[in-house]
Image 1: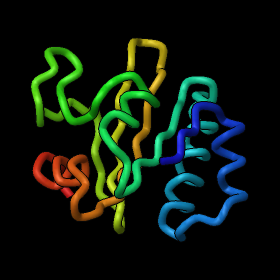
Image 2 (image 1 turned 135 degrees about the vertical axis):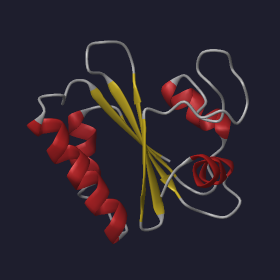
Image 3 (image 1 turned 45 degrees about the horizontal axis):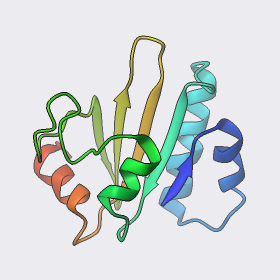
Image 4 (image 1 turned 90 degrees about the vertical axis):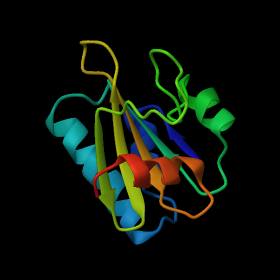
Length: 123
């Protein structure tokens, strides 16, 4: 898991070895964030195959495997979902300030979150 809570951490991870698709996704999200003036209001979390639901909750404070309102399991409430080559992009907005969590989820077999994306997301 890569937890990127600041614009500086997003920039810094691009100096690390990353897969080509993931690198492009992060670079594009960084550019979009800056272009929209949301660099202080955007947090990226890269969820990889072996990451657990509890690790996600520890990183962002909620589980994407259940509704944020009533905790119904397997009831996605993302605001945006898009499929990329080997990855899912989920967007969760919080409040009216423009704050958002962007989850980049590896589309791996055995990943409950990737399975939920496949069932609930148009790709």
